[in-house]
Image (cartoon, rainbow, N blue to C red; front, side, top):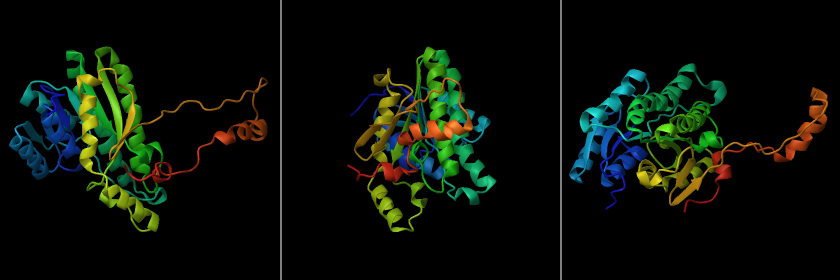
Length: 295
């Protein structure tokens, strides 16, 4: 049995099922004391019971991540129950998929509140404890829907790309306190992804592939990133897809053009864009880029 996070205290948001449940169980199996956070009291308690039956230590917390006050209660639950906080896993999420031009203000706000604001609020609440003890690890869930793109997910994609920026900023701002922050874009079939449309033959094929990818496969990387073994790993974007672990690139300049007398709209059209056009990225979705079968 792994003891990679033995003695550490981990908060896992959205851990009443799916990927979060797998992470909570793996954290406990590797020696961590776990706060199982989920807005469903029944689901959260069920995971706590699973952990305790297996000999681990956990408590349930049903506070929402989507406001600063309730997010602070999640972190405080860890400190009150176990004395400190070492690992924050921002996993809580919802989907409100709809084409951009049909998306309501509420559908936009609900997804941003849980994914992006929730990741900020929970992370921010833990920051004071991490600074004081000069240690800590954040693991945030992003998505290839944001990193690459997908139909009908302007809200979700925006939130997930925002989380990438948040994670990098945390890694930079908190490095002086030996605090690390990384992202994972998970591929897994869960109750949340089960709402992905499967109307066209292509969509149906994608869903069949997703159904093969177990939620528990994401957990080992999360446990590692939360452990002291990962003390030099920060500011990175990973992905887990069945038995694959991928490291994602981050935006960097790919081509530059120069005009000594300065650019005009006309010279941009005639010179700059034609010079750079060969390096343009195609309008692709996640399954277009990661188009091989799960391994």
